[in-house]
Length: 380
Image (tube, rainbow, N blue to C red; front, top):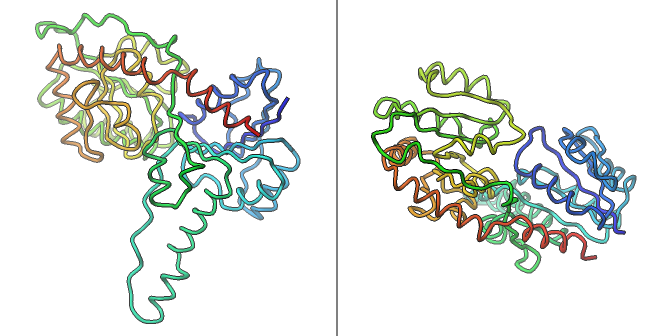
């Protein structure tokens, strides 16, 4: 039986952590799995009934990075090492170098979030300008990042947008950079009858749902400002926000400031979002950056039409005007208009929900994506 070492480093639970749990569960019987948590342990409880899985919590590595990573990798020696990256810069260059130096037969990296483009070319004339272009931060960053891609045997991207960015911006190899889009368990997410709001004469509030970490990248503040505009013209709705994170108190304060207390509820992290999806009429995700969000797939599979910003792989999931609405990232006005449109166009909302369900069912089955990912991880 092969031995696989997963490493993870995140203080928050999100799609990358859920994805890893789903993958390790499907490794049962095929590999001995060790998960090294260089931050919080989100895995022990979820995987407690899997005897071939071991979870180890270690301190975050901040000093002597090559030596510290190498010591950890040698101590928990395996055949394959898998770096799970919720953000592009989760691990330093030294982690990649340590993995290869320790003699691992295979290094697989899973990229869950699209990276930022490299800053523009350094300007300037004379010797100083030439030296900055040759040896400056931008050049060093590009070369270090490109080398990370070449140290990895395979880089798995959860959306084609991530893959294209890594190849175009960072010089990753087309042959070793592959796309395996996220999937969900379609048996768990099924549409429910949404007859309450089919006609405009119905007076029950329309239920808006957002499922996201309460962190800067998710831009919940943008959603709240859009809802404040919406409250002035369309008052027959309520919004539930599921998730936790470092910005919770700040966002609660913004709700009070915008006088949205009667419209918006923060319901915290929920282990099972299905009851909330079953009650929802509309799903909203206003992120400024994404890979391919599982929350979006879960909503679509449940027949809930989405309004999402067109970032990362969201455009690979939502067909604008058919299975949902895509809006420009950072635009409060566009977000407000899209939500308002689906609030008042009941038949369009119902139709988009049906199309969203069929699209998710056809293209985003977790068993297909996990089978491909398992093959890549164990092919050594």
